[in-house]
Image 1 (cartoon, rainbow, N blue to C red):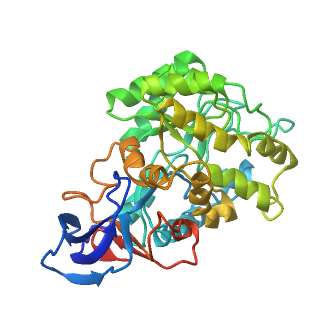
Image 2: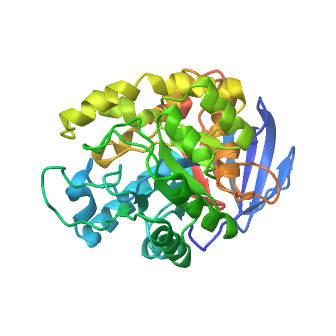
Image 3: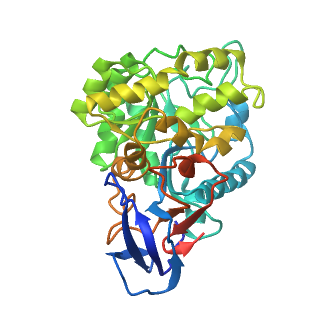
Length: 400
C-alpha cells in the first residue's frame, strides 16, 4: 500500500457499509487516508466527489490472487526470470486496482521485494498481502515436474517442495521472517498439476499440524488448496483456517468447517475461464479433464457452505492471460448468492479472513478505500462485474 494518503469528501452517496443488507444515503469524509466521518450533510474537506445517484462500497478484496502467474503451470511458470515475472506482476496488480480491488492476498507467490516496491509507491497496486511460495509435498499440486522426466526442482516463484515436519517448520519460519502474511499449503491434487489425483489429501497429519502450529504461534494462519471432502476434513482437523476452492465440498465437510470457524474462499472464475478459454492458454488435456470434474461443483459447494453457516469469502485464482476475467468471479458467485452476501464476501468477510479490522468496511477508523459504482448494485448487478460499466476507485483517500 502506498505511503502517501489523501483527503476527500464523497457526497450524496448510496452507501453499502460492508455489513448491512441495504444502501443508506450519506456523505463520507476521508482524512489522511482514513475514514473520519460517515453521515448526512458533512462539512466537505479536501477534494469533493459528488456521488449523487452512485453507490459507494468498500474497496473490494481478492483473497486468492497470483501476481507472479505468467503461465498455466509447469516449469515455465516457476523458472522464468524473476525480473520478467515481477514486471508482469506489477501490471496484474495495477489492473486489479483499476477494477476496484484495493486489497489482494497472494496465496502462492509474492515476496518482500514486490511488497517493498508497493510500499514505496513505485507503481499502482492494491494493498498487498503475500504468502510466498506455497508449500507442496513431493509429487503434490505444487510439484511442476513431469512424471516421466528426471528433473531437479526444489522451488520456484509460486511453489516450493518441502517434505517432513522439521523441514516444514523451517520453511514456515523463513516465510514469516521475510514478511509473509500467512502460509499456503497444497493439501490436495489440483487442476493444472498433471500427476496428482485431484481428490487425494496431501501432506500427513503431522506435517499439516507442524505448519499450522508455527503459524498460530506467530499470530497468523494457514490457507490450504483443497478440493475433496477428504482433503478438506484432513486440513481443517489439522489446524487449517482457510480452505481455497473447496469445489467438491459435501455436507459433512461443510459442517466441520463451520464448527471450526474455517473460511471457504471459492474461486469460481478460474474454472469458468479455463473452460471457455482453454485453447487460448494451451491448457493441457489432463487439466481440461480435471477442470470438468470441478467446474459445476463449485457453485454447489458455495450453497452447501452457506447452508452450514460457513463464512464465505471471494477469490479469483486466475493464471496467466486469464487474469482479465477477475470480475467474472463476482458474476458467478451472484448466480448462487444474494447481492448482500456477495458484497460481504468481497469486503467484510474477506477482511475477517485476513485478520484486518481496517479494511472491508465504510466506517470511522477504516481505511479510505472506496469503490463508486454508477448506480445501485442491488437492482443492477452488472455494475459489479461488467468492466465496461463506469466505476471510480478511491484508495486511501486518493482517486486512482
